[in-house]
Length: 45
Image (cartoon, rainbow, N blue to C red; front, side, top):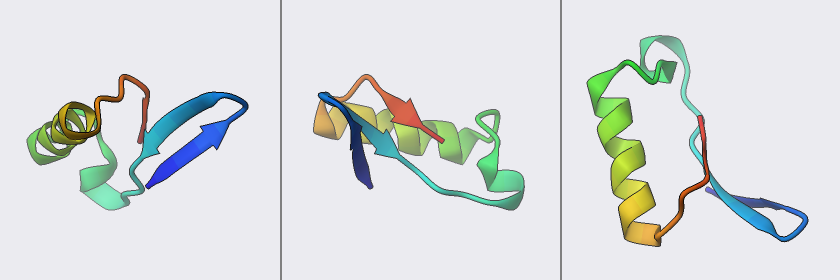
C-alpha cells in the first residue's frame, strides 16, 4: 500500500505474527522488492 504524509510517500506493509518481524527473511525480501520495483526508499512495516 502506498501512503503519504505531507509531500512524503511511503510503502506500507501490514503484517502480523512472526511475519511482522524485519528479521524474517521473506518479509525483508518482500520489502526490498517493493523498494526496488517502486523506487521508494521509505518503507513502513
